[in-house]
Length: 205
Image (cartoon, rainbow, N blue to C red; front, side):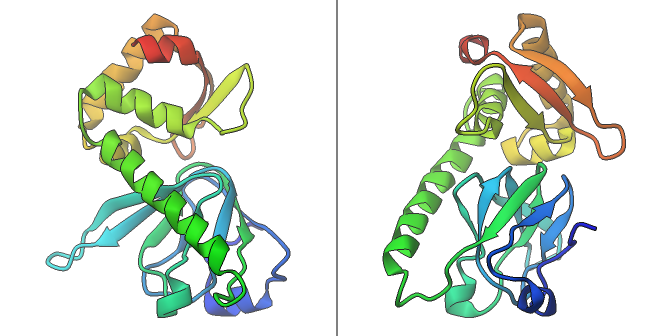
């Protein structure tokens, strides 16, 4: 059975050479929980933060293949964000000794800065451009033709791009008409779908 969270007692029992796998929509950890840093080896992780005033969650960022999840525990001992599997994903242990792995941490933080810039770009500009950028990010870095993207549910895509669900739906319909997206498999239980992607037509949209 797949783990639902990286709680302290779970992490202590996990052999640090073994990966953890999560299904789309599965909670990885809650903000404030203790644990260890991990690296995304497959898939995409969504981060959310709790608003101080009303306690509601709001989108805070993404972690893609090669990015870290929970680097902040090295300094603060706890996770700063709620983490959820945006797509099916796999996490592998990341060395947690700062004195031995300072260079690795610096490289990881540089990647984090780039990811922050990517997320800002997802939330600015024309609606079609935002949706296309998100789909491009969802393509595995090492993907070869035929390209496949595991699209999250419309609500997730809308929150990430700061658009309405209706607008995202219209943009996806437009991309399908252009031939940039071809639905391959729809997941009825947890939303979202897998699509074949034409990078050339996506860029021209």
